[in-house]
Image 1 (cartoon, one colour):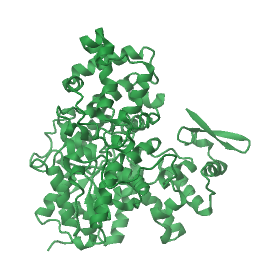
Image 2: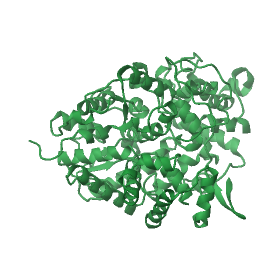
Image 3: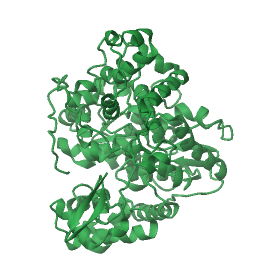
Length: 498
Length: 112
């Protein structure tokens, strides 16, 4: 754990609404994208001269395109229901991190240019011109929103701050002010195929190494196939699964499940990324371009099914958007969900007795489960509402003897973001990430003290990396966070089914 | 935005995150100077990691996955050191990012 120059929040007895600290996070900003990273995505390299005019024009275009955006900007009655629901507000006390205040940064410009009262009497209705100061506030505070949508659950009108953040970031990109972290990564997906910039030979080398490891551990020849023509299943995993811990332990779990199921599968070196960071910058064209790589890989490899690995926003994009974004996927086998989540796949195999698990293999752990925001609030699994909460827990409970849920207001549709989602998982935002993790750490501490919980499983690459990084700041070991399929991997009975 | 790392009489340009702007600028002095800024004195064991990263990068144009790295270090320095805990002892900011920086590699990006 690195040293910090900020105060680490103290976990209290229960989650308190913090005292207000105006301006507490006014300095927090991610690095801006360099010209080459902007231009690679078709955005201006630097702030354009007539940026205010262009920004308003872009907002007009977005209002036309997304009816929802106009509704969200019009509907707020300042009831205050959202104010204490954002993990970044709860962790920092900065009133600008109240969702309503974040929305108002864009809403005031909307009112100025797109409402009669705002055009005539701007001061009376809180309408503002977009000046250089406000532009900087946009950049800072729209990069203190992880687009997790928790606030929208509590808003009586269902106003979705994530969509407002995405719109603001899209406008910022359009006038030449992009975020380095997201835009550099999207560029890598276009050129190399994944967020990491992992070229095919390195991916092949990594997968060979995993085959050796699993053989050594289990004595079984479990394959990690790459670019296999005619495989039944194309697995789309987040590239962190190839690279980082505990992600890779989840990848090993997927491979063992495929092995035991006897279903042929493959990874693709062309579409070696589940994540779609274009969602975070709200850019439809970029999102489509990233998604089309997966479609092309599926067609080129001639697969019949696509399964998505443990990646939160990837599942949102796949489940909610793929069909219209990159579809139709009518070349896939309609007898299976299109697309299918790896948890759905494993759950089904466990239920049918194809995969057998020895729970005792995980007796050294007491588990809880962190619902990842995008899975929880933007998708579903299985064939009934709430399946996205039930199926992961069923797989965990089938893999271990000791499972305890965290407090209800911190799980399910009310789950807290890990603090690193939405394009914020970058080192220069460490203070924000540590503080934003406070509500989750609080809930974890409770089950740790009450039930002796030692580990927390997740199904999102960002959550796993974020928790690995921030857990030590709250006194937990970094390996408290585990992959869901890591538990399956530990417990799965390998060899011939009897 | 660029900054620089001072080495003896000269300096080399690094980006806002402290990674080399031109990878060709790297030499052992650069690594030592970067480590010194973090109050770390590079030992032989640090160099085993740095050298492996450089070799791997030369072959694959990317940093190795953590498992590839731990396995390689385990083979060289003994199995008790072939794990990420040991690598974090050497590079407390994280082996992937801090060690890559000292080794003159680009910063690994993504959900890591």
